[in-house]
Length: 163
Image (cartoon, rainbow, N blue to C red; front, side, top):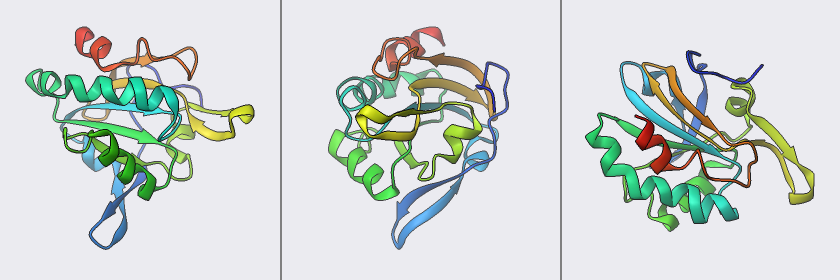
C-alpha cells in the first residue's frame, strides 16, 4: 500500500497488549470509533531516539493533548506485546496514561505504507517514525519523519502545536 495521507481512513488492524491472562487482541477500529486519538509510531522499543526523544515528548505533552480533547495517545511499534508492556512501564509512559500496542508482525505498519528495513541496525519490517491525529479513524494530521533516526516533526510538542 502507498503511505497514508491526511484524509485516509486507518485500516482495521488487530494489535496486541498484555492483559491479565497474557496477550490479548485489540481491534484498532473499535478504539478509534467516535474518538479523537493521537497515534505515534516508531522503529522499536528501547532504541535510541525512540527512548530518549519520541516517547518522552508524549509523556511531557499528555495532559495538554487531553485539554485539546484527545481521548487517547497510542504508541505502536513492531515489537512483541511483552516488550511493549515493559518499555511503557520503564519509560513512565504507562503511568502517564499512554497506551502501548504491539504490531507484532508489522501488519499495521505495512497496511499504512510505513514499513521499512534497516539491515545494518538489525531492523526488519519496522515502522517509520510518525505521529498522527485521527478523528473517528480518519487521519486529520500526519507528521512523518524523513528518516527514522530523526524526531523533529513527529514529537509530541510539534503535533500538539499543530492541533
